[in-house]
Length: 531
Image 1 (cartoon, rainbow, N blue to C red):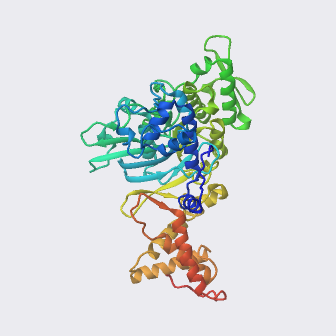
Image 2 (image 1 turned 90 degrees about the vertical axis):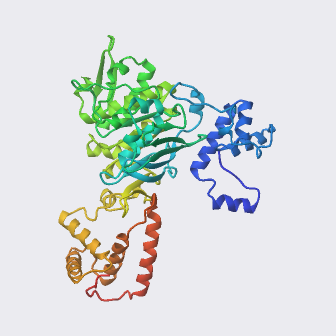
Image 3 (image 1 turned 60 degrees about the horizontal axis):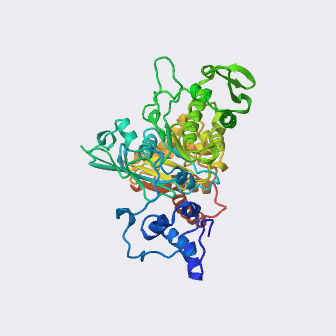
């Protein structure tokens, strides 16, 4: 179908479509983008892509057949096109500005990232393709300090920005490799791309990229995002990328005044529309160009004559990021709304008031509707604006290895306090730190298989204390059910690259259902012996 969906001609075909979920959103999007690319390709390019074995070649074969254009040779006998010199390929090179029209014709969203032996991460596989958003997909990384959130963002930035940028940052295999590892890799999958973008690093060897130049537009920011002050000078990015601040968070953002002062009136109008959608209603920012060269002032919340340096750190941070993003997007498109890119942000909520954190992601999505934002945060307020399938929690398993907890409950249906005590943040209590410590000790003892007499005595004390606090319910049924849930939560997870929270929940519910069925609903609330 022209919209990217697939249909079947037989009942068995429909069964296969349902079995393999062939009409899931990301596959439909990828096929639709390939159809757009097919329309803009020459006949020679169409035949070359259809004859090969690269990604989506089957889509090109079907489109060729639908147009009654015969293949020049049997595609079954043709070798993989990526290994055949001289095979025509549709080239996109954002560093050199090649294939800009092709870049704009197809989506450039990241659907998967695989990391091997990069810093603290030994093996990690993140699926970013499950977003249910009608806009560009976004993704949030949660987890405790030191669990690898910033590492994931840096790995993405390094792979997407290309070999030249890695050299500019003086990146070496020794700087990236995990301790005691010989070889590592970052592999990024993008919708519509013929192949993954792969960066390989080996001990005592230079970094190796499978492509000579970048195919992406990418910007990346660290946890500190401030404009230049005093002796601290910004560092200019390249045409297609600007990621230095992520690797050096004390490096200031580029001062926006010069670029804003030189904008044509039509572009300035669009920039002001973007800024208006980003700022709170009572502090709308409008850029006003003066009569002289480089003369610039702001209108903030209706007050005229303000300078960028007069704004708070939060406003300066958002304004600096917004101008950075617009500068890069404008180089590859005539308007912000139709140009795609990837923006990586470490600690999104930094510098923002809580009321602004609640709306900052929604504001960014509205201002840059075709930009994919991937960010880390410790703040539940910064999850507002996410859709189902757009968040993962990084955790450590029993061996200390980092894995991703995915398939989490939709954040839009949870209150802030519920988010804090959910799988997303994992707090046992939002009230008293001592109660949090007691709950942690209780869960640890509950999960100990061979408890000593001293352990049993302490566990009974904790059960009584937590029962008095109503943490363990008020009836025997409630206490048994909650203890079962707590003991399930303390089981050691296997050393995997990712774990489904939904599957873990289903397994626990099955056990709970069995126990509850075995109990009388009228059982008196006697004291419960710990499980």
